[in-house]
Image (cartoon, rainbow, N blue to C red):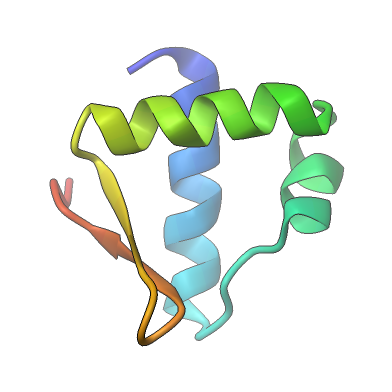
Length: 66
């Protein structure tokens, strides 16, 4: 994982611990990056098998918990 991927992943993990799914605006605010960079990073994390979106439950699933 790149540093930015690790940062986004950790933000999602931390927010999920408190029962909240981060929105795109949350990620933009917390990372200082634009929508395009965040979407590319999320796609990369999903392709690497780190994250998966559960459509029914509307939450992130961590596939490789660290």
